[in-house]
Length: 435
Image (cartoon, rainbow, N blue to C red; front, side):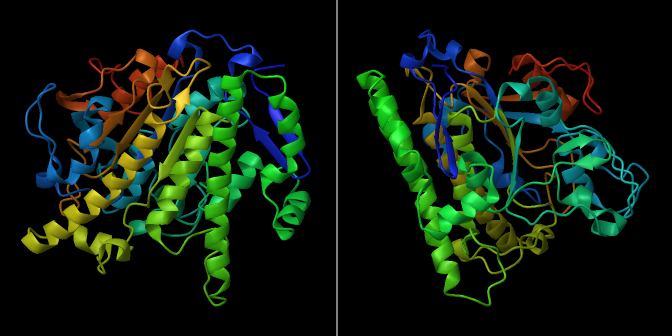
């Protein structure tokens, strides 16, 4: 039996996590793969409420960051990183489109709304091109926004720039999936859309179809692995049920235009996407993922937290104290969900001997291509690097890079820890040290 073992049935293919009974070495976190993810938050932040006080290990979190307090030893805040290619650099207005486009590429987007788009390869796809063959999916791209690859968006920039942070080549974005059902079927479906549709029409769980295969496997694994398999299948079923509940709820609103599987609640939408990323990493379906919480310039409101104004409109606060407090409330909301995601990773054992967890063996960069939304600033960006990187990172600190350091220098350091060779990413000048 191979470590990457599948449970198979009509309309379902479930890749199970590592297990000692399947020949995986029991040597701690080093036996588990290292994963890498990037999470993009739009429109900048209220910097006064975001910035931590102090440096090193004895720093104090800003009020917007309070949801991360119990995880403070599991992440590091890195200040002083810039995104120069999000600046105009002679191209005029369009900071929001440029922020999304350059965040993972470090490249200046050609200002065009036509088909002659030109940017660069993003850090996640550099990794996917070298190590993506080791997993079922080279990478996983997620968003809460609908995909757009053309059209005119911010100040004459193509919508391809503003709605995609992952780029396979200078002219080819990697469109992100926003529908949790579609992501679930990609991870656990048969790959045959007709079979998967038949299963859903019969209101059958993917686990119903792999049950016999699972029963046979349980007879051939250790008691520890049986418990692990049960716990894993329960978590898959829980996510599947939540998606199903949202779809049932949608059916009560026939005029509602959102596709099946997309919750009406933005908070629930974010949670499902994060949970699917956890499942993808847990099964080693992919080791590379990106998640765009919303595109820069997004003017969505936040009824979940009582904010009726649009985020983009609020970001142009003009120094208004009340508006800044509302922005801080939105920042807190996003960090709350990020903290929940990190906690789920921390609570998920990883490796055959379960001495490590997913957070120990992952690197997750969370940030924005804009600092202060009112000024459209692209310097000293809000940036959190979470996870232990399989022992290759030093979390629990607040550090600052030298003034003018490109954000892409951090990405070179992350690729180095993934054993991915890259001399340069966009405007990078070298590997960022001290992470």
